[in-house]
Image (tube, rainbow, N blue to C red; front, side, top):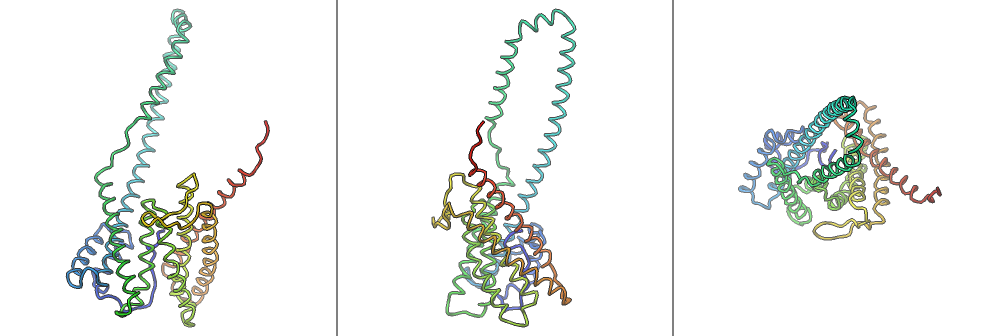
Length: 368
């Protein structure tokens, strides 16, 4: 699950006019159901062009469409990449199976030929005389074959892969535009019509950016934006708990679940940074070169976010039980919470494996 894919259940707020457009809602539905390439991208591209012409490039109306267009592009590209990867795996598995069958047939044919040769004294004499040279030539041939395999040129990108890269890059630009506009809007003393709506969108946009950075293996940048989303998620939980009538509501569950998600995503990306380098590099953002976490602290920081996620997940599960007992419809929240539990388990398993490796390193070498 990605940081901005889960559906949110929030009260009705004053929102930009474009969000009420039937095409906007239809596009959101298509993206959420994995059908970005079936009209979602085109809808948001059209809406973005219209809002830019009507309200201006830097308007909050345009910001709404910048993000949705970028999100649609990214979700479409990531799903296409996943489908292509699955197809390659199936193809590789089929090729490997054919290779094994072919190798077995070749080996059987070779055994048959050797048996026929061994049947004549002449063949035995030739075989003994040429044993050493035959062995040498076989070794040489094998090495030449290995060299040839190792020197195979890298696979050239297909047109589809190039298009996917372009879509991801454009998606990143669109999301960054949306964030810049909304960040300035919420910081400004004027124009408070959509303030509450904008504050909800900011962490969603940050998580969307994190998903893109993670997809292109810029894990430090993903850590950066996911971390910046956390204060918004924490504030949302605090706010909903202040209202007694919402403490045991679907809204409260959504806020808690989104906070767990933010913690888990940061932990995942920190652990990805650990896997990316073997020489203990710091977690540093790509453009600004800000050191987010020192190399020796990466695992402990990941563990800290894991612990926070685990504690908050327990609260979410407890709340989910209360809501279910009251007869309220959980909608997709139960599925989302269960998926988060699976993600959290994966982080826990990775941390446990890393701890085991560290313990192995500390053990004294056994004498032979």
